[in-house]
Length: 241
Image (cartoon, rainbow, N blue to C red):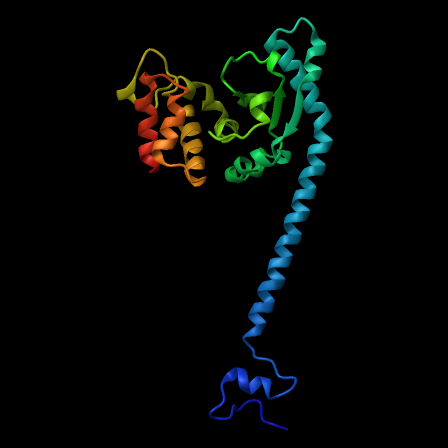
């Protein structure tokens, strides 16, 4: 029986262990432990996701009913049955083209944030493809935009609004009317306010992570806003790049 505590001179470690049946190098144990740890983490993540789904399913009927009432009032619908055409989906269950935004936010508190996918003929915000009602943990998207690719990152923008409200609800409305940059003041505190500063900054960070350049981001946002707003956006972009 060879003495396993002594390795013969002239043999590499791998050769030595191959020549002694039944022996295993100790260095494999950390690898095995890492694999077990990885599998445990996957199992825990699956259990966590299952728990979230169950929680969302239980809360859904009451949540949807309350949001429908809100939309009827907000849109001043004379025919209340029109609200039944709106499709509702929780952020946790977003389709593939929007899941990157949810993952980027990396906050389980957004799992139950409700997205209302609104038929184009019910949409009241014109060319604007989305809006949020942060106090209701609600995001609304124009259906034709939602079904396509969100190349400009509006989902990230709106999710940030909802998260900002969760983090600082008492300051949210005040921050909407508080200038983010005093030297860029104008007649209106939009988009240059503290809330939009956070939302657009997060949106631009997401786009940068998707491989967009400074020039590409500025080009996309320039199509959505007036030239007077560009100094605000340029300052945010400069801070990211």
